[in-house]
Image (cartoon, rainbow, N blue to C red):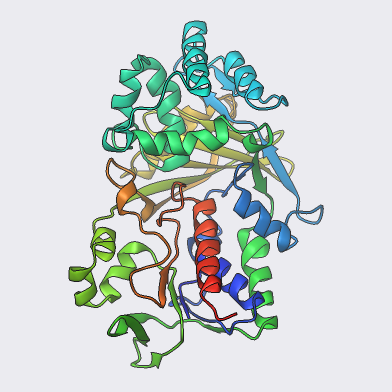
Length: 427
Protein backbone atom coordinates (compact mmCIF):
# COMPACT_ATOMS: atom_id res chain seq x y z
CA UNK A 1 0.00 0.00 0.00
CA UNK A 2 1.34 3.40 -1.01
CA UNK A 3 0.25 6.72 0.48
CA UNK A 4 0.51 9.56 -2.03
CA UNK A 5 0.78 9.67 -5.81
CA UNK A 6 3.48 12.21 -6.43
CA UNK A 7 6.47 11.18 -8.59
CA UNK A 8 8.01 9.04 -5.83
CA UNK A 9 4.79 7.19 -5.06
CA UNK A 10 3.99 6.58 -8.72
CA UNK A 11 7.53 5.35 -9.41
CA UNK A 12 7.46 2.88 -6.53
CA UNK A 13 3.99 1.67 -7.49
CA UNK A 14 4.99 1.17 -11.13
CA UNK A 15 8.12 -0.81 -10.23
CA UNK A 16 6.33 -3.03 -7.72
CA UNK A 17 3.32 -3.66 -9.97
CA UNK A 18 5.63 -4.69 -12.81
CA UNK A 19 7.34 -7.06 -10.38
CA UNK A 20 4.01 -8.84 -9.88
CA UNK A 21 2.86 -7.37 -6.56
CA UNK A 22 -0.67 -6.16 -6.01
CA UNK A 23 -0.44 -2.44 -5.30
CA UNK A 24 -3.02 -0.11 -3.76
CA UNK A 25 -2.50 3.66 -3.86
CA UNK A 26 -4.32 6.10 -1.59
CA UNK A 27 -4.55 9.70 -2.82
CA UNK A 28 -6.41 12.41 -0.94
CA UNK A 29 -6.86 14.51 -4.10
CA UNK A 30 -8.93 13.72 -7.16
CA UNK A 31 -5.81 14.21 -9.28
CA UNK A 32 -2.70 12.05 -9.41
CA UNK A 33 0.80 13.44 -9.67
CA UNK A 34 0.74 16.10 -6.96
CA UNK A 35 2.15 19.55 -7.77
CA UNK A 36 3.77 18.07 -10.88
CA UNK A 37 0.46 18.24 -12.73
CA UNK A 38 -0.15 21.96 -12.13
CA UNK A 39 -0.79 23.47 -15.55
CA UNK A 40 0.16 27.06 -14.74
CA UNK A 41 3.46 26.46 -12.95
CA UNK A 42 6.96 26.83 -14.37
CA UNK A 43 8.39 24.01 -16.49
CA UNK A 44 10.16 21.17 -14.68
CA UNK A 45 13.45 20.57 -16.51
CA UNK A 46 15.28 17.25 -16.71
CA UNK A 47 19.04 17.64 -16.48
CA UNK A 48 21.40 15.31 -18.27
CA UNK A 49 22.71 14.08 -14.91
CA UNK A 50 19.17 13.07 -13.85
CA UNK A 51 19.70 9.47 -14.85
CA UNK A 52 16.85 7.90 -12.85
CA UNK A 53 14.35 10.34 -14.36
CA UNK A 54 15.60 9.78 -17.89
CA UNK A 55 15.60 6.00 -17.46
CA UNK A 56 12.01 6.01 -16.22
CA UNK A 57 10.82 8.31 -19.02
CA UNK A 58 12.57 6.17 -21.61
CA UNK A 59 10.92 3.06 -20.18
CA UNK A 60 7.54 4.79 -20.45
CA UNK A 61 8.24 5.80 -24.04
CA UNK A 62 8.20 9.51 -23.16
CA UNK A 63 11.66 10.29 -24.53
CA UNK A 64 11.13 9.84 -28.23
CA UNK A 65 10.37 11.77 -31.41
CA UNK A 66 6.69 11.59 -30.46
CA UNK A 67 7.36 13.82 -27.43
CA UNK A 68 9.13 17.00 -28.60
CA UNK A 69 11.70 18.48 -26.22
CA UNK A 70 14.25 21.28 -26.29
CA UNK A 71 17.75 21.29 -24.82
CA UNK A 72 18.55 24.71 -23.42
CA UNK A 73 21.75 26.51 -22.55
CA UNK A 74 22.29 27.74 -19.02
CA UNK A 75 22.43 31.54 -19.14
CA UNK A 76 23.17 34.07 -16.41
CA UNK A 77 22.53 37.79 -16.33
CA UNK A 78 25.44 39.61 -14.71
CA UNK A 79 25.11 42.80 -12.62
CA UNK A 80 26.18 44.90 -15.63
CA UNK A 81 23.15 43.39 -17.47
CA UNK A 82 25.25 41.28 -19.83
CA UNK A 83 23.81 37.81 -20.41
CA UNK A 84 26.42 35.05 -20.67
CA UNK A 85 26.04 31.33 -21.36
CA UNK A 86 27.85 28.59 -19.50
CA UNK A 87 29.84 26.89 -22.28
CA UNK A 88 29.22 23.28 -23.21
CA UNK A 89 32.04 21.26 -24.68
CA UNK A 90 32.15 17.67 -25.88
CA UNK A 91 35.46 16.61 -24.41
CA UNK A 92 35.86 13.68 -22.02
CA UNK A 93 35.84 14.39 -18.31
CA UNK A 94 37.69 16.27 -16.74
CA UNK A 95 38.80 18.11 -19.91
CA UNK A 96 35.20 19.16 -20.45
CA UNK A 97 35.13 20.91 -17.06
CA UNK A 98 38.42 22.68 -17.82
CA UNK A 99 37.11 23.81 -21.22
CA UNK A 100 33.77 25.08 -19.92
CA UNK A 101 35.02 26.80 -16.79
CA UNK A 102 37.98 28.28 -18.63
CA UNK A 103 35.68 29.96 -21.17
CA UNK A 104 32.94 31.06 -18.76
CA UNK A 105 32.73 34.86 -18.92
CA UNK A 106 30.81 35.16 -15.67
CA UNK A 107 34.15 34.90 -13.84
CA UNK A 108 37.26 36.98 -14.34
CA UNK A 109 40.39 35.31 -15.69
CA UNK A 110 41.88 35.30 -12.20
CA UNK A 111 38.79 33.60 -10.73
CA UNK A 112 38.75 30.99 -13.48
CA UNK A 113 42.44 30.24 -12.93
CA UNK A 114 42.01 29.95 -9.15
CA UNK A 115 39.00 27.62 -9.48
CA UNK A 116 40.75 25.40 -12.02
CA UNK A 117 43.86 25.23 -9.83
CA UNK A 118 41.72 24.28 -6.85
CA UNK A 119 39.89 21.57 -8.86
CA UNK A 120 43.20 20.20 -10.14
CA UNK A 121 44.43 19.74 -6.58
CA UNK A 122 41.21 17.91 -5.69
CA UNK A 123 41.53 15.63 -8.70
CA UNK A 124 45.18 14.88 -7.96
CA UNK A 125 44.41 14.15 -4.30
CA UNK A 126 46.74 16.81 -2.93
CA UNK A 127 43.75 18.66 -1.46
CA UNK A 128 40.57 17.42 0.22
CA UNK A 129 37.27 19.11 0.92
CA UNK A 130 37.00 20.32 4.48
CA UNK A 131 35.15 17.71 6.62
CA UNK A 132 32.86 20.28 8.26
CA UNK A 133 31.05 21.30 5.05
CA UNK A 134 27.69 20.06 6.33
CA UNK A 135 27.97 22.22 9.44
CA UNK A 136 28.80 25.57 7.84
CA UNK A 137 26.92 27.70 5.36
CA UNK A 138 27.83 27.76 1.69
CA UNK A 139 28.61 31.46 2.04
CA UNK A 140 31.10 30.79 4.82
CA UNK A 141 32.77 28.03 2.80
CA UNK A 142 33.08 30.15 -0.35
CA UNK A 143 34.54 32.96 1.73
CA UNK A 144 37.17 30.54 3.03
CA UNK A 145 38.15 29.76 -0.58
CA UNK A 146 38.71 33.45 -1.26
CA UNK A 147 35.82 33.82 -3.71
CA UNK A 148 34.83 37.48 -3.73
CA UNK A 149 31.36 38.71 -2.80
CA UNK A 150 30.60 40.05 -6.28
CA UNK A 151 31.01 36.59 -7.86
CA UNK A 152 29.04 34.98 -5.06
CA UNK A 153 26.08 37.27 -5.68
CA UNK A 154 26.30 37.26 -9.48
CA UNK A 155 26.95 33.55 -10.11
CA UNK A 156 27.11 31.29 -7.06
CA UNK A 157 23.91 32.49 -5.38
CA UNK A 158 21.68 32.22 -8.50
CA UNK A 159 23.11 28.75 -9.24
CA UNK A 160 22.54 27.64 -5.64
CA UNK A 161 18.94 28.85 -5.66
CA UNK A 162 18.22 27.20 -9.01
CA UNK A 163 19.60 23.80 -7.96
CA UNK A 164 18.48 23.71 -4.31
CA UNK A 165 15.83 26.35 -3.63
CA UNK A 166 18.08 27.94 -0.97
CA UNK A 167 20.53 30.82 -1.02
CA UNK A 168 24.16 30.82 0.11
CA UNK A 169 23.34 32.21 3.55
CA UNK A 170 20.97 29.36 4.47
CA UNK A 171 22.40 26.47 2.40
CA UNK A 172 25.03 24.16 3.85
CA UNK A 173 28.38 23.95 2.08
CA UNK A 174 27.92 20.21 1.58
CA UNK A 175 24.52 20.73 -0.08
CA UNK A 176 26.05 23.24 -2.51
CA UNK A 177 28.86 20.85 -3.48
CA UNK A 178 26.46 17.91 -3.79
CA UNK A 179 24.05 19.90 -6.01
CA UNK A 180 26.71 21.41 -8.30
CA UNK A 181 29.00 18.42 -8.83
CA UNK A 182 26.83 16.21 -11.12
CA UNK A 183 25.92 19.10 -13.43
CA UNK A 184 29.11 21.17 -13.59
CA UNK A 185 31.77 18.47 -13.08
CA UNK A 186 30.09 15.64 -14.96
CA UNK A 187 30.21 14.66 -18.60
CA UNK A 188 29.14 16.91 -21.46
CA UNK A 189 25.77 15.15 -21.67
CA UNK A 190 25.23 15.66 -17.92
CA UNK A 191 24.93 19.40 -18.60
CA UNK A 192 21.84 19.14 -20.79
CA UNK A 193 18.77 21.06 -19.63
CA UNK A 194 15.78 19.42 -21.29
CA UNK A 195 12.32 20.94 -21.28
CA UNK A 196 9.42 18.98 -22.75
CA UNK A 197 6.63 20.64 -24.69
CA UNK A 198 4.02 18.27 -23.27
CA UNK A 199 2.80 18.44 -19.65
CA UNK A 200 4.07 15.95 -17.10
CA UNK A 201 0.60 14.46 -16.91
CA UNK A 202 1.16 13.09 -20.43
CA UNK A 203 4.84 12.23 -19.95
CA UNK A 204 4.71 10.48 -16.58
CA UNK A 205 1.36 10.24 -14.81
CA UNK A 206 -0.83 8.82 -17.57
CA UNK A 207 1.69 6.20 -18.84
CA UNK A 208 2.27 4.96 -15.28
CA UNK A 209 -1.49 4.87 -14.61
CA UNK A 210 -2.00 2.76 -17.73
CA UNK A 211 0.73 0.38 -16.56
CA UNK A 212 -0.83 0.13 -13.10
CA UNK A 213 -4.26 -0.60 -14.55
CA UNK A 214 -2.81 -3.32 -16.77
CA UNK A 215 -1.12 -4.86 -13.71
CA UNK A 216 -4.38 -4.85 -11.73
CA UNK A 217 -3.37 -2.15 -9.24
CA UNK A 218 -6.00 -0.27 -7.23
CA UNK A 219 -6.04 3.53 -7.16
CA UNK A 220 -8.29 5.18 -4.59
CA UNK A 221 -8.69 8.91 -5.13
CA UNK A 222 -10.14 11.37 -2.62
CA UNK A 223 -9.09 9.03 0.17
CA UNK A 224 -7.29 10.86 2.95
CA UNK A 225 -5.18 8.89 5.40
CA UNK A 226 -5.46 10.19 8.97
CA UNK A 227 -3.62 7.55 11.03
CA UNK A 228 -0.95 4.88 10.68
CA UNK A 229 -2.05 2.00 12.91
CA UNK A 230 0.70 0.04 14.62
CA UNK A 231 0.91 -3.52 15.83
CA UNK A 232 4.04 -3.65 18.00
CA UNK A 233 6.89 -3.25 15.48
CA UNK A 234 4.77 -3.40 12.34
CA UNK A 235 2.24 -1.23 10.57
CA UNK A 236 -1.14 -2.82 11.05
CA UNK A 237 -3.18 -0.65 8.68
CA UNK A 238 -4.05 2.84 7.45
CA UNK A 239 -7.14 4.56 8.78
CA UNK A 240 -8.78 7.06 6.41
CA UNK A 241 -11.03 10.04 7.08
CA UNK A 242 -14.23 8.03 6.61
CA UNK A 243 -13.16 5.46 9.22
CA UNK A 244 -12.13 2.76 6.76
CA UNK A 245 -8.98 0.78 7.61
CA UNK A 246 -6.88 -0.44 4.70
CA UNK A 247 -4.47 -3.30 5.35
CA UNK A 248 -1.53 -4.69 3.43
CA UNK A 249 1.70 -6.62 3.97
CA UNK A 250 3.93 -3.65 3.13
CA UNK A 251 3.41 0.11 3.39
CA UNK A 252 5.21 2.97 1.65
CA UNK A 253 4.60 6.59 2.60
CA UNK A 254 5.19 8.93 -0.35
CA UNK A 255 3.78 11.94 1.52
CA UNK A 256 5.61 15.21 2.26
CA UNK A 257 7.40 15.02 5.60
CA UNK A 258 5.08 17.57 7.23
CA UNK A 259 2.05 15.50 6.18
CA UNK A 260 3.56 12.22 7.39
CA UNK A 261 4.48 13.00 10.99
CA UNK A 262 0.89 13.82 12.16
CA UNK A 263 -0.15 10.32 11.03
CA UNK A 264 2.51 8.45 13.00
CA UNK A 265 1.95 6.88 16.43
CA UNK A 266 3.27 9.05 19.26
CA UNK A 267 5.21 6.03 20.52
CA UNK A 268 7.31 5.97 17.34
CA UNK A 269 8.04 9.70 17.45
CA UNK A 270 9.34 9.48 21.03
CA UNK A 271 11.17 6.15 20.73
CA UNK A 272 12.94 6.30 17.36
CA UNK A 273 15.47 8.98 16.42
CA UNK A 274 14.65 8.13 12.78
CA UNK A 275 11.15 9.61 13.14
CA UNK A 276 12.17 12.38 15.57
CA UNK A 277 14.61 13.76 13.00
CA UNK A 278 11.89 13.88 10.33
CA UNK A 279 9.89 16.20 12.56
CA UNK A 280 12.95 18.49 12.72
CA UNK A 281 13.04 19.03 8.94
CA UNK A 282 11.76 22.35 7.63
CA UNK A 283 10.56 23.55 4.25
CA UNK A 284 10.74 26.75 2.26
CA UNK A 285 7.87 28.39 0.41
CA UNK A 286 8.19 30.24 -2.88
CA UNK A 287 6.24 32.42 -5.27
CA UNK A 288 6.04 32.08 -9.04
CA UNK A 289 4.98 34.56 -11.68
CA UNK A 290 3.54 33.78 -15.10
CA UNK A 291 3.76 36.49 -17.76
CA UNK A 292 2.10 36.64 -21.17
CA UNK A 293 3.85 38.95 -23.63
CA UNK A 294 2.60 40.01 -27.06
CA UNK A 295 6.02 39.66 -28.64
CA UNK A 296 7.57 36.73 -30.45
CA UNK A 297 10.47 34.75 -28.96
CA UNK A 298 12.77 32.86 -31.32
CA UNK A 299 13.19 29.90 -28.98
CA UNK A 300 13.08 28.81 -25.33
CA UNK A 301 15.38 30.61 -22.88
CA UNK A 302 16.43 29.93 -19.29
CA UNK A 303 18.30 32.69 -17.45
CA UNK A 304 19.54 32.85 -13.85
CA UNK A 305 19.37 36.31 -12.32
CA UNK A 306 21.17 38.37 -9.64
CA UNK A 307 17.94 40.41 -9.51
CA UNK A 308 16.44 41.72 -6.26
CA UNK A 309 12.96 40.57 -7.29
CA UNK A 310 13.50 37.46 -9.47
CA UNK A 311 15.67 34.36 -9.07
CA UNK A 312 15.37 33.06 -12.63
CA UNK A 313 13.14 33.30 -15.69
CA UNK A 314 12.02 30.76 -18.29
CA UNK A 315 10.69 31.88 -21.65
CA UNK A 316 9.09 30.02 -24.54
CA UNK A 317 7.22 30.94 -27.72
CA UNK A 318 3.44 30.80 -27.52
CA UNK A 319 2.29 30.68 -31.11
CA UNK A 320 3.73 32.96 -33.77
CA UNK A 321 3.42 36.37 -32.13
CA UNK A 322 3.27 35.75 -28.36
CA UNK A 323 5.54 34.45 -25.60
CA UNK A 324 5.06 32.99 -22.13
CA UNK A 325 7.52 33.62 -19.29
CA UNK A 326 7.71 31.97 -15.88
CA UNK A 327 9.82 33.32 -13.05
CA UNK A 328 10.69 32.55 -9.45
CA UNK A 329 10.21 35.55 -7.17
CA UNK A 330 12.45 36.38 -4.23
CA UNK A 331 9.31 37.42 -2.36
CA UNK A 332 5.60 37.77 -3.21
CA UNK A 333 4.38 41.19 -4.35
CA UNK A 334 1.52 42.77 -2.38
CA UNK A 335 0.34 44.79 -5.41
CA UNK A 336 0.01 43.32 -8.89
CA UNK A 337 0.91 46.72 -10.37
CA UNK A 338 4.30 46.64 -8.64
CA UNK A 339 4.85 43.10 -9.90
CA UNK A 340 4.04 44.11 -13.47
CA UNK A 341 6.43 47.07 -13.33
CA UNK A 342 9.23 44.82 -12.01
CA UNK A 343 8.52 42.20 -14.70
CA UNK A 344 8.58 44.81 -17.50
CA UNK A 345 11.88 46.18 -16.22
CA UNK A 346 13.37 42.67 -16.05
CA UNK A 347 12.29 41.57 -19.52
CA UNK A 348 13.52 44.81 -21.08
CA UNK A 349 16.89 44.44 -19.34
CA UNK A 350 17.13 40.97 -20.92
CA UNK A 351 16.14 42.35 -24.35
CA UNK A 352 13.07 40.11 -24.30
CA UNK A 353 10.54 42.95 -24.43
CA UNK A 354 10.76 45.92 -26.78
CA UNK A 355 10.13 49.42 -25.49
CA UNK A 356 6.92 49.78 -27.50
CA UNK A 357 5.55 46.42 -26.31
CA UNK A 358 3.86 45.60 -23.03
CA UNK A 359 2.65 42.70 -20.94
CA UNK A 360 -0.63 41.05 -21.90
CA UNK A 361 -1.42 39.60 -18.48
CA UNK A 362 0.46 38.52 -15.38
CA UNK A 363 -0.40 36.16 -12.51
CA UNK A 364 1.30 35.32 -9.23
CA UNK A 365 1.12 32.03 -7.33
CA UNK A 366 2.44 31.27 -3.86
CA UNK A 367 3.32 27.68 -2.96
CA UNK A 368 3.95 26.65 0.62
CA UNK A 369 6.52 23.98 1.50
CA UNK A 370 7.98 23.88 -2.02
CA UNK A 371 11.56 22.98 -1.11
CA UNK A 372 13.24 21.17 1.75
CA UNK A 373 15.45 23.68 3.54
CA UNK A 374 19.02 22.37 3.23
CA UNK A 375 20.53 24.43 6.03
CA UNK A 376 23.55 23.10 7.95
CA UNK A 377 22.75 19.86 9.76
CA UNK A 378 19.85 18.83 7.50
CA UNK A 379 21.77 16.05 5.74
CA UNK A 380 21.86 13.82 8.83
CA UNK A 381 18.11 14.26 9.38
CA UNK A 382 16.98 13.13 5.93
CA UNK A 383 15.79 9.52 6.35
CA UNK A 384 16.82 6.48 4.32
CA UNK A 385 14.09 4.43 2.66
CA UNK A 386 13.84 1.66 5.27
CA UNK A 387 12.38 2.83 8.57
CA UNK A 388 12.89 1.03 11.91
CA UNK A 389 9.45 -0.48 11.33
CA UNK A 390 10.02 -3.64 9.31
CA UNK A 391 7.12 -3.27 6.86
CA UNK A 392 7.20 0.53 6.54
CA UNK A 393 9.29 2.48 3.99
CA UNK A 394 9.52 6.17 3.14
CA UNK A 395 9.74 7.79 -0.30
CA UNK A 396 9.86 11.41 -1.36
CA UNK A 397 12.24 13.99 -2.74
CA UNK A 398 12.96 15.03 0.88
CA UNK A 399 14.46 11.65 1.84
CA UNK A 400 18.17 10.82 1.78
CA UNK A 401 18.88 10.35 -1.93
CA UNK A 402 21.99 12.49 -2.35
CA UNK A 403 19.98 15.04 -4.37
CA UNK A 404 18.24 18.30 -3.47
CA UNK A 405 14.44 18.14 -3.40
CA UNK A 406 13.89 17.86 -7.14
CA UNK A 407 12.32 15.46 -9.62
CA UNK A 408 15.41 13.26 -9.70
CA UNK A 409 15.36 12.88 -5.93
CA UNK A 410 11.67 11.94 -5.97
CA UNK A 411 12.07 9.27 -8.64
CA UNK A 412 15.30 7.95 -7.13
CA UNK A 413 13.57 7.58 -3.76
CA UNK A 414 10.70 5.66 -5.36
CA UNK A 415 13.20 3.34 -7.03
CA UNK A 416 15.06 2.79 -3.76
CA UNK A 417 11.86 1.92 -1.90
CA UNK A 418 10.88 -0.59 -4.57
CA UNK A 419 14.36 -2.13 -4.53
CA UNK A 420 14.38 -2.38 -0.73
CA UNK A 421 10.99 -4.06 -0.66
CA UNK A 422 11.77 -6.47 -3.50
CA UNK A 423 15.00 -7.57 -1.78
CA UNK A 424 12.98 -8.67 1.27
CA UNK A 425 10.43 -10.73 -0.64
CA UNK A 426 10.64 -14.53 -0.33
CA UNK A 427 12.50 -16.01 -3.29
